[in-house]
Length: 124
Image 1 (cartoon, rainbow, N blue to C red):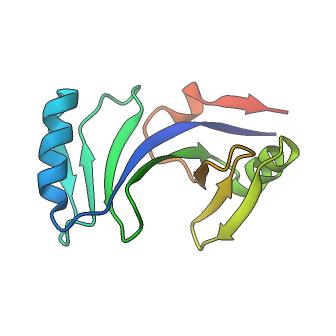
Image 2: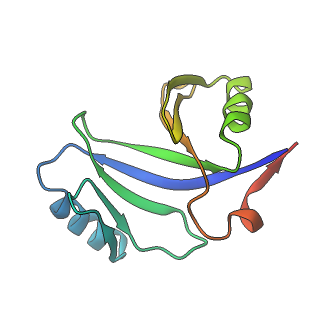
Image 3: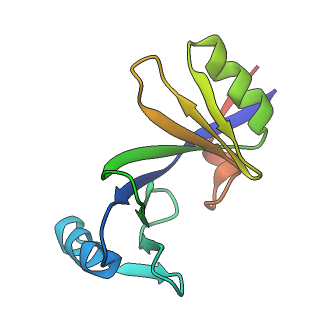
């Protein structure tokens, strides 16, 4: 038995100025900028604990959007999603990159937002 939920919408930005992109999305979504890492590789927009997070990530590949699914058991969640037709793309140290039958990529990560225990779906 394990739990999972939608955790984060990640805006992968192929850009030389992630701060500029964060300013745009902050204004577009009416959300202030919560955190920046020192290298501006990741910028998180502020959200309420019960809301899905929005994170901007500086990337080398073309810009696109992907999601992170939070879980308390990465291995079990990967197996559950494989049974639904998803495929493993790459296993990283702290997350697994998967691909849906539609070819959309997404990541399976550990819990990062408050309220995971209370708000995640329990899978048997």
